[in-house]
Image (cartoon, rainbow, N blue to C red; front, side, top):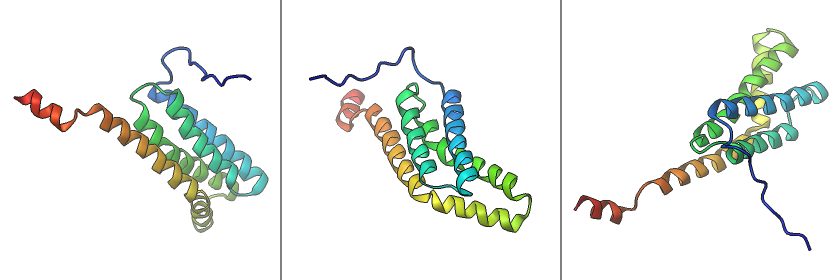
Length: 140
């Protein structure tokens, strides 16, 4: 019977800039693929958003959690808007409807990944704070 071993990362991990580029390119690729083949975004893009968040939390350096949590919704919104403008042209009413539809179709994935990411972020922040009893004994 084989045992499952965790993959070791060589080096310290991705910097904040690397996390942003990784997530933007990864999410943008899936938005582009689904927009070309389906004429809209769907479940593959949603899974890509969740995978980008998890990957950046896993492969990022310590201290990149905030950037890992904030970037996926912004990257998705930016790429969805650009691809919508490229596919529809610059007709504000049509672009607005298609953009809002793209955001609405990915809302469960964006909300779920944001909740998980913010939980991880605030959990790490709370672990760095000393306990209340430790603070009072340090002041005495």
